[in-house]
Every structure is written in C-alpha cells, then in structure tokens.
Image 1 (cartoon, rainbow, N blue to C red):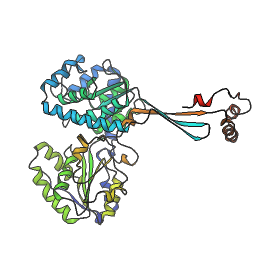
Image 2 (cartoon, rainbow, N blue to C red):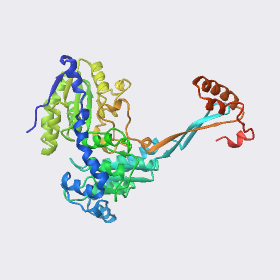
Image 3 (spheres, one colour):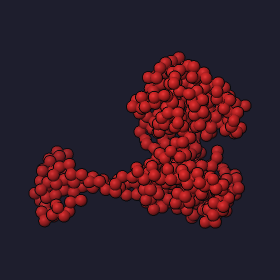
Image 4 (cartoon, helix red, strand yellow):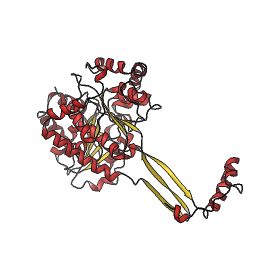
Length: 448
C-alpha cells in the first residue's frame, strides 16, 4: 500500500530540520564500512572462491569458478534472445553517448607560449585500466554499461572490464551483454557489491586488477570504495539515486508529478523532492502522483511511495524562488530538473548539481538513457566539488614544459632567488652559473 506524500513548509522548519532534509542514505555509512571489511579480506585471501561464495550468499545465485567471466557464446546468445527493437534502442543510445563524449575529448597535447621562449601546457593520455560497475539488484541497467564504458573507450583506455552481479539464474542480463558488445567491451565478470570492488582492487585468478573503478551502486559498494581508496581509485562518488525537481508557477502539474516519480522508483534508499514556491502546484502534484502510480508495477510503486512518503523525499514549499534556489544549491543534487516556461532565467544561479535539465521536454529519463551527457553523477552533495563521469575520468594529464636558451636566464634568476629563500641549496645550485646551458638547440626546429 502506498504512503501519503510528505509535505514540508520550508519557512516553518527549524534549522535542524532543514539540515535533515539535506541528508542522504549514505550520509553515515560506518555500519556498511564495518560490514564490508570481512568481505574484502575474504576476496583478498581466497580470490575466485570468495566470489563464488558471495554470489551464492548475497546474490542468491549459483556460479562456477570457470563461469565468472562471460564467454563469447554468452554474448551471441544474448543477441539472439533480446528483442531486436531493444537492440536498436541500445545502438541508438550508444551512438548519442559516443558522439557527446567524442566532442568532450581534449587535444592530445596543448602547448602555449605565454612568454617568448617559454612553452607550457598539458598532455593527455589514457589510464591503463578501469573496471565499470553495473548494478543489478533492483533491475538490469544496460544504460549504465554504456554510460561507464563508452567514455572509457573514447578516451582510449586499453583494458576495460565490466563487473555486474549475476541474476538468480547465475547469468548476466542479456541487455547488459548486448550493450557491452555495442560499446566495444568483451570482458564482463559476474561479481557485485563489495566483493567486486575487492576483486579489481587486488585481482583474483579470473578478475584482473584495475587501477580505477567507476559506476553507481549501493551503500555497500560505496563503503568498499572508501575502504579500498588507497588501493584503487574509487572514481566519482555515485551512490543511491537522488533528484530535485525545481518548479515555478508556470510549470505543468502533470510534468512535475511524472518527473518527481522518476528517481524515486529506483529504490527505498533514493531521494527525490519537488521544490516550489507555488502552493497550488505543490498540492496538485501531491494529488496527481497517486493516480500515476496506478499505471506502474507494484514494486516500483512501493519504492516510489517509500521515498516520497519518507524522510528522503516529498514536496517542499518555499517562500519564493530565491529560497528554492538556495535550497537546491545547498542540497547539490545528482539530478536537477527545472520546470518553468523560462528555465534559462534560473540557470546562472544554479551552481551545485550533477546535471541540470531545463524545461518540460527534458525529463530525467532522457538524461538517464539517450541525451548523451553522462548519467553517472556525483551524489550525496558531492556535486559541490565533483563532476559527472566524463572522458576526463579515463585520462590523466601530464604537465609539459620547454624553455629556449633565450628565455632561460630570467627564469633561472627568479627561481634561484626563491630556492635560496626557502633554503633549498640543490635547487638554487641547479639554476646557478654552475649549470651548462645548451645554446645549440634550434628553437624553430624544436618548437612544438
């Protein structure tokens, strides 16, 4: 049975209750951190045997050691079984995501000459390996396959693998395998949660070690990433789904209700709020959502009503749009949708969000699947300092410098002064008269 949607009059809330609205499921994951430690230790010590054990214990799936990695025939079977129209849609989405990330790619090397004879810039090269995590517990997510792997492929990462929990039948979801092949990745492994993070952090007999892991997941996954952050780069903080729908009085009630449901149906640990200064809109949305739930399946309605009727979701009425925007920036949502007849009028003031989707024709559903920008976004307020997953997550930047003989003396003089002041005798000596300056270099020939 669905719960009534929770309503908050923001002006009447105490400062403590306002702060409480900003908390997410993973705000305190100390319990999860303690829970993942024995799992991590078991995988580190027992490798594949531990993965088989946790597939049975946690995923309720029987898998054999030699079935941890998907075989070519598994991919072939997935293409044969999957609805051709769904394959077409996966190819459509992959093309949009690929094009967006190709446009995002920086030049391989950028050098400027800010002063005569001084060249400075950056070179971009791909990281050596990455594990892309694709959750499974509350559904199957070929969209996450594409969002995590395609920018890695575009960036040129030589070793890309996918980690995903097995289903109850011990197999990988067909659409996941199809999306992987469409993206250009053929290494898919059956392991989920904390054990997946440990597997790629240390490597097992079957699962190769990776230098980074990306992708969204449960608090258990987030906790394992934190515990192993000194072993493997944990990537963009991406925990349970969250969204804010910011709407003014010109917004469509139906659109606001529909879009508030989107992220709330992910699971009971999600967060979703409508934020508006318009009381009539707020009341109409609350009355409309139960009617929309009647068109959904029972499990998704349960998730959505749990979120919208609990402490992590509902409708927030503010005094005005200024207060609404202030709340949005404090919350720093993963997904932000702006419903207004003039959404761009608010854009400059919205500074903290993983993504900002503007107008009635840009629902979060499009962003999650086919718009092109990455839908793996920072959660739990991390959008204040973190960015969406992008090609830059799969590239490392190296600074490049080159100084011509004519430009060297002035730089050396000032470097010597600073080195002497800071007490670095070797630094100073290296730019003193003791240094042989190679004046034979031809700046024309050597100029990038």
